[in-house]
Amino acid sequence: MTVRTLFLFVCWLLSLVLGGCASTSQVSLTEVRTFADASASLGGYAELSRRYRDTYQREQPYLSASADKVARATDARRNAAYNDFVAVQRAVVLYMQTLSALAGEATWDLGPRLDELGTGLKAGTESGLTQRHIAAYTGITRLLTRTVTSGYQNRSVETMVREGDADVQVLLEAMITLTRLYAKTNENEKKTVLGLFDSELAAAPRGTDRMLLVLAKVHLQNKTTEYRLLDKRYDLAAQGLTKVALGHRTLRENLHQLTRADIRLALSSYAQDVRLIHAGLRGE
Amino acid sequence: MSKDEPGLEHALSTPAQVEALADQLSACADQLQARLKTEAVAIGALPEDSPARVQRREAADQLRDAEHALRQHANSLYADAATAIVATLGTPQEQVIALTRAAARQLRRIALVSDAAGLVAGLLQLAGGVASARPGAIITALETIRTQLKAVKAGLPRKPA
Image (cartoon, rainbow over all chains, first blue to last red):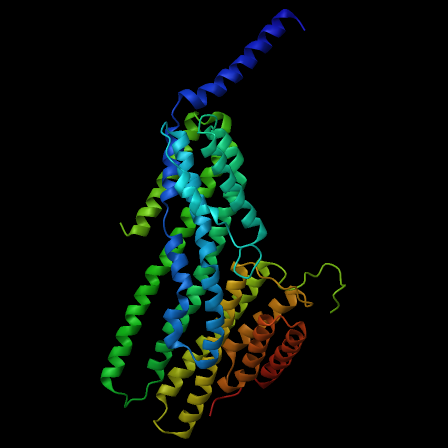
């Protein structure tokens, strides 16, 4: 190798090292922080999980005896799984909050929140999630524990994202799948309730009490509106989760160029989308 | 329909397959509901206390109960998919889906609502067999559905009384 080649090689090597340093310790990654903050605050999933859990309470008055028997059995299973369903979200939220702290310059005490994750997910029983989900959940818990115990000093955004992305994606995918199953269950609930009133009203004989007819029509109207508003929430929640997944993938694919203008723009854009969806869910 | 046939995925061996069957049962319930709505309108137009009205009312009510049961079985399967409960059955997935899809089509088009009872019973048998993970019951149910589909097709068109 000539002296000139060696010199160029050393220059190139130095630029990598210095470039790497510059993107973490000296520059505050504003867009990473705003994306992580928005992701941590995304709503919808928790409320829809509660709604899913309470399905039987709402639909019970409308069910025939044979349908009721099946419904009760399903109700028990939904209730048993509920804690695991919300634990998944807690893990993702805590991850995003930690990422935000790393991307800013503050540190904060993760300890107490970590304890909430500590109990872990139920493994392999009829109330649990798949082994894959449990492994991802455990992975995130361990990553966050490492971050805390190292006192944040040696943890960079890059390390966090690189080590956490695979597990975060698995957990987000679980939430998206569950939101879809919640929506489909809601569809059957809606059609049971609305269908009953719709056909009873159509079959009502001419002599039916006028008051009864009016009450039934009003109830049908109210319920129809209620379900229409709810349908939107399932959509919004799923969209929001998808944006978070896409944004984190962008982070993972651009770890060495997080300060590049187009990457920062992409992250800002995802943060904005997630914030808008959150606002939509709050009814703004 | 042997378990050893290559390339045939065994039914309900993944959460996605479980969800797909739940979608089919929901679709059958939807088609049944649509048909029952038409029937309800027809019943509403009949003279009060006429025997036809009473009879058709009873048949429709029974089928509506069955529709609710189908939806509950579907929701039960969605819960299975959510918690990744799978039980591999001997029957290939496509067969199950194809039959339930054909059932949904027939339910919508059936002339005499009471003729749907046999087909709906077959669907409920299928759902029950799946819920208790009994491959034998499922195979029997699929046979019932096949037979009922042929009978329904042969019976078309028939006008209500």
